[in-house]
Image (cartoon, rainbow, N blue to C red; front, side):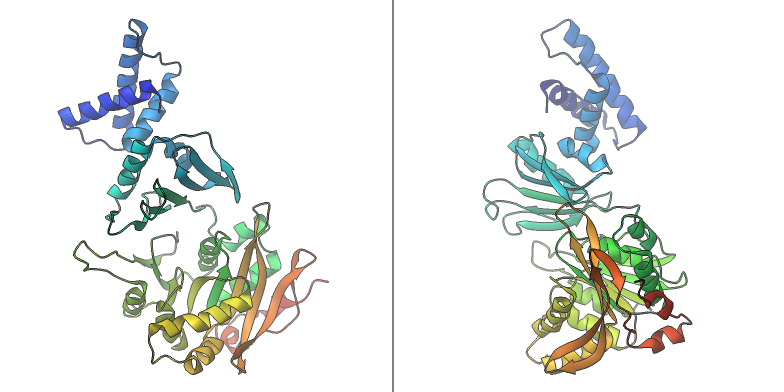
Length: 408
């Protein structure tokens, strides 16, 4: 932050406090900042204060300090930037189209902690020595994750994951060449048929974006209930209830876990249940819900579609000693209809790598599955295999077979 911006910011804050102005990111804030910038520029002409060379940029920088998130605000405002992370005052990174780059931005250490405090101000979440990690949603819907010393080495480690609001349906992913029109048509058909879909992939492969696009194909009359660690899904459906977890209070009470939210969601008359990501014992509650006939969707970190099934077979065992794989594995085989596996290429492009369909059979503890789409010579193509459980599609009056005919 330049000396001019720092001085003007201090004057604006002093004026806001002195005059008890309710300042928000609107026209009133812009007018107040612009008047202080002009006043400072006039004083600088007749004194030894640093000159203001660009009043518009200076005003924008001050506004970011007052109502936004300081040096990070321009990155948050840039629609081409999808992720921001800060490792140290001089190590501010951004990612465009999956490709990371080091910026020239420098945030002094004292401003860095102040920035974290301002980000958490509207979230109701805390960050201190007893709770050095935090996950929260910023006002624009971006996901914030922060780790503070002494868990991080010296400085707070900040990560902000933005979400592309323009990707609301499968057609947008086809336009980005993440999948083919044929695969998109099949997935659309599967969602309309009420299939249970597991979206898998490594970190930052676009799993949440894919879930949002898939839900864009759900029938308009459906009531969708979503449960997440922090709000990430951005749905435009008519009837949506979104819930997120809550951290414990200073007294260690009041925590609401993902497992509790899944249980509560089942009491809210959902037509489709969506779990942002399964990591632990909440997977058991999800499986029980899916096995009861409730259509659902969730994401999971995995290296492949088959690895996703193996991992999902393991996570419910964390729910307690009385949970046995002899129950979990057959339940997954019968409940999960499709696994959509995503990958990110070295150039940052995200794409669907494979679409797998469990057959419902289990052999020697391994879930049998058929590959419906896979990458052949870099192109996602149908294998010609008929999906199991065609009766689901028939009941909803849709026919997936025309979308599964190989194009070669």
